[in-house]
Amino acid sequence: MNAARSPRPAPSAHPARSPRPAPAAISAEHLNDPRSLAFFRGAKALVGAYFGIGVLTLAVIVLLRDDSAEVNSAVWVRATIVAVSALVTLLCAVRAARGSRAAYRRLRIISAVTVVAIAAVVALPGTFPAWLKAEQAVCGVFLLAVVALINGKHMRSLFAAR
Image (cartoon, rainbow, N blue to C red; front, top):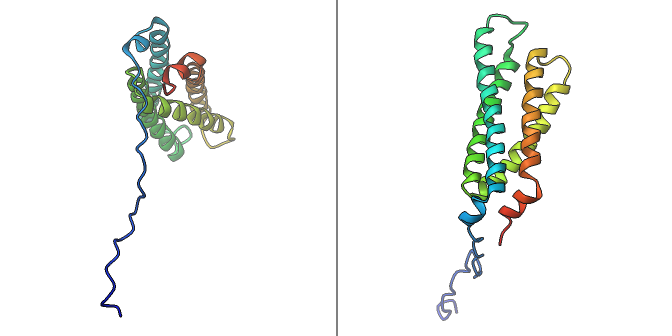
C-alpha cells in the first residue's frame, strides 16, 4: 500500500509572497535643499559635541582614576557606554545626511532612548559623582535638541516612504 503512493513535495518554508517594493530613494534635490542641509548640519554638530564631550569625559576619568571618590567602576562603565553610543549616533547622523532611511530611523531611536537613559542617570541618587551628572545633563541637552530637530515635520516628511 505504501509503495503505490507517489512522493509529495515538501511544503515550502515560505509561501509565495510578492516582494515588498523598496521605498524610493531620497532625491539629491531634497537632500540638498537649504532647509534640509541646515537641519543635518545642526544635528551633526549637536551629535558631534555629544561625542566630543564623551571622549573628553573619558580623558578626565583617566586623569582622576586614582581618586576613588570621583571615579568608581560605575563611572568607567557609564563613560565608556556614552563614548561608544555617541560614536554610533554620530555615524547614524552622517549616514542620514546622505539619505539613509535606516540610519535616520536609528538616529531617532538612539537619540530618544539615550535622552531617557541620561535623565535616569542624573536623577539616580548617589551612584555617580556630581561632575558626571553635570556632564550627562549637558549631553542630555544636546541630544534633546537632536530629538527635536530630527523628529520635526520637515525631517519626517523628507524620510517618509514615497
